[in-house]
Length: 385
Ligand SMILES: Nc1ncnc2c1ncn2[C@@H]1O[C@H](COP(=O)(O)OP(=O)(O)O)[C@@H](O)[C@H]1O
Ligand SMILES: [Mg+2]
Image (cartoon, rainbow, N blue to C red; front, side, top):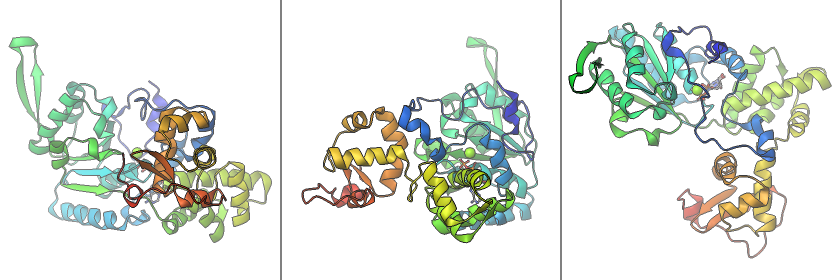
């Protein structure tokens, strides 16, 4: 495993043996294989990759005050942390859930920062055996923050060990094998577990119940994203005017990570093709060069919508058929393109297949044919299959 990884989380992190990510994280579990249309879309991928992590570390807010948006989470968490500080105790365990790129890792780091304690980092996929977790837990000091990313991907035996550690600050270390094995209870100092997951629904109830505070991160509105773009621009020494920042914000799919990434591409464009100042026309030119449209749709998204409307009269059409029409794998269409199309109200998944909404026809600049099959209200409001 590469050791360049230790730059991932910035310098405020304390790295022990426990902090290494497993090979191939974060998403090696049957992630859709990318075919040509999908390949070009790394720009709108919500997961961070490779070098990007170092840049992200530089753009991360360091304190709750610096966090933009997510008011409710900020206020609640602020209260939890202030109260814990007042009592001189480690705060309750915190679960952060929400789609990639919305600030889970950022907030975990802020928790450690606000409590002035070191943070240890590990992830679900890195903990394959209960022993891996035992080693991490027994190395903790009082008050440490342990960040467990992708907690839903931890193995079952490790999960069970974690229940006990979270509740009783104890692990049972198994010594020996077979019938002669004995469990030696080992006390661990009070610590705060910060779990992050993109799939809160996959967490077993007993694990979820052991978090004293759960925060669900929501997608950001354009105004918040605009502030994020402006803030990042000043950290990157890029001059962006208000309209330029708004243009980038509205194409960022509600996701700060994407906003920051688009900003970097626009900056490149400004540097090479213009005088370096990011205005609205410049942002528009840059993003159309990178094939990100006004609503943040890329080529794959548009190909899906176009096939759905132009070839299948707006549907309903089965996923497999739609995938063949755009020359992609089923999984790519379903996991890469559809979530955003559904969320932005262009496409509905119904019992009979995929259906284009009136907004989809409009977005493609097409007249809505009189016989277009509009999904019923239930489908539009997310009751799927
Ligand atoms: N509320 C926010 N305010 C400002 N920047 C943010 C905010 N949330 C996320 N970011 C930026 O977005 C990037 C991705 O955030 P991160 O915490 O890594 O997301 P996640 O862990 O949920 O995938 C970071 O570089 C961070 O700078
Ligand atoms: Mg993260």
